[in-house]
Image (cartoon, rainbow, N blue to C red; front, side, top):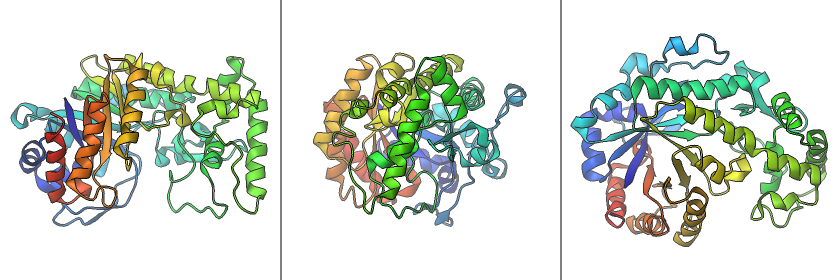
Length: 394
């Protein structure tokens, strides 16, 4: 069974590798570490660190040593975090210590969510129906952005040989809560957020047009919806069956419907290219959410190309978790890895029994394991809650 915890390099460095490994295996009962190897900016309260109670990681950097020979001809290139230079290559340390620690190593790899690179290469980010850039999201239709994501995983898998790579954000991202200090006086509802997230950059429009999709008609429809939502005194729901109906919620708008049906193509093909470029010894899985279609993810199509998925079910009750996992298993089939991501945050998890019930619901519904979030962001005593959850599923 896959049993892992998402972890930042600096958390292991603060605790020391031996202490970390003993806690993860002994106290938490886990067998894998999912290490952030490409990550974005943030502000983190770090209860575990003896000194760094508040931490601000560099934006859009990687936590390994890139192989320059793979990047020479690439427009978009990674920046190695200062952490690697100043405190050491934690990915390499974990790989070398696999036998000693008994921990498998998975690389938690952020692909296209990168504001630093988006600001540097604005021609390669997603753009809404008015052409405004979303700097935090490199577009999966951009050849340069695709080459970046593919080479990132190729570099990690060929030069480090981890057991697994977990792909975060190889897809289109939402509009809300993806940048920082967001301002919204309108009061966007979920369908508004979705409409604002739809990409009509030059790369998407060219790729869709080549596939025979009426992209300009779709863009005009979305632009009209956005203009209308901006004019209302208060938000209103226009699509009563959104998001439950998926793209069928927009079936009365043929051009937009056709565009949404096409929209999974760049995401699916990118994941396929990543898988093809990766070292075959490393499993490639997708990190996704309950309604992955919102980001252009077709889980059935993706599952045919990579090794599986981890579906994050944060702040969900056991019955809802079971529904998500059963749907995920139906999409992926029986042979692919299906994991669940569970957060160990308070107050959404108020006691050990809550976490255990969620983990059990997932495994009973067909999950192959659990990723817990996040080692350095929770008090040490909650590792005991993780151990209790592991105890009910193995």
